[in-house]
Length: 176
Length: 153
Image (tube, rainbow over all chains, first blue to last red):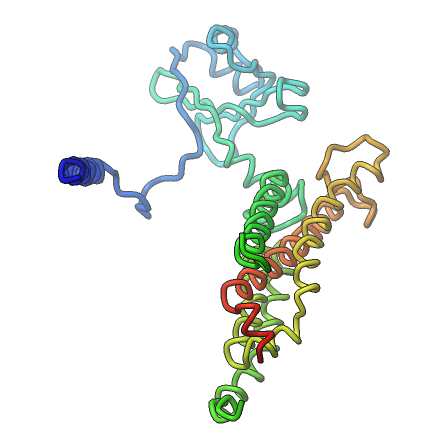
């Protein structure tokens, strides 16, 4: 018995040490000055003459080829981001895999002689189209009850199951 | 029996009698305004259940069981779930199998697709609220009271 207790104590101390060590590495969350993650950077290209094509709404060959190599959905047209210089929104066409409607998918930004390609995060679509599609102004609710309706149904079933199991355990008329 | 009468406190009883309707009203507000502001079924259900907890704490558990009998809250806990699943099923039935499960837009409340969706969200929140309220009350009764003591008195 004594050996068991000693081993348990050592394991507990080790576990506490690991927890303290891990907690040291955790970054500071909830920094109010941190920018919102609206897009993820994919890659960058040499600009060349593709700026004119983008301004006319066409997608340059180089970008389509680069996207095809990396197996991303192919773009259909470009549009200038309102209120920004050297900045374009790129759309993907209808009936693309998983996207039945036309979606704003990439963002291209020109910095110096390079074109930086970003992919929009899902949050952007959620904020821009959520109210139009569901008619519920509260962003959390239309996520909870509409986009993730199955999930909430499951959560409700979990609560119901908790109630039933408490009834089964505590409301015993006869002792087992 | 007489000792119980002495324990009753006029101030607490009166205060809780005034508080409980307002707590319930607030709970209904939280549930119905889930789509407009902060809130929703889970929170509103818990607030509604807390009004019953206050009633049971101030008065005793027998009075509480008279107000909300065992048969009622056991049935309610599954009714809310049936409302949720039923709304999902209704969208399949009323669109003749065109829509997916839980796609509220196809339930013809109004002529607008988006308005149907928001009304479907409201119905679902009501279902969630009923279930959460009933399950919380059920767990509270099971933890608080013993059956034999109730029968003895």
